Image (tube, rainbow, N blue to C red; front, side, top):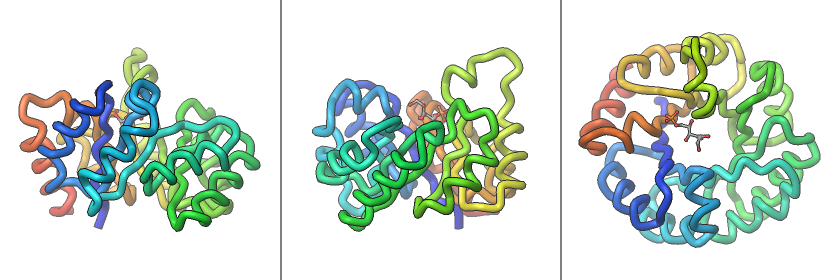
Length: 210
Ligand SMILES: O=C([C@H](O)CO)[C@H](O)[C@H](O)COP(=O)(O)O
């Protein structure tokens, strides 16, 4: 069954903990967004893991260099999963995987901005990563003509374990699951909703019904 990951793109630990408390019953993975980690530092990772020891805490570091060092910082703080950029060199990904193995944790490669996400996903999946994120970031989503259909099509043909992130919501989540994504990432559809718990519950139920 596909997992649901809430992406928390809020800016303070207080807001992030408040949101996580509302949606935790419906999600498997709690993602601390890159802007949140940049604003609050690794302390937000520790605070979230302490509050939700039963959830996977995903630190969206988007590491581009010093893979082992950055991953080690996040794992030591309590992260279960960290991201490394697909655009980074293989050595950076391999370094992060080394840190993950030392901590018994995992690495996710984020393909944001990469011209051929499918090819890079297939390449890096041989490096010991947990899964690859087929990702259209917020800026790409706000570009004229963007459609999540491109990620859905990629997920259907990639042939390696992937998550999909880039505007997942209740109207497209079933298509994302049916395309074969193992992890469904939803940010604005949850934290931007009037009732985040209800939005997360609705996504969870839609995923489980596929
Ligand atoms: O990773 C993300 C982005 O780079 C900002 O940190 C988002 O969390 C990811 O795109 C999911 O968010 P939504 O697209 O709003 O669902």
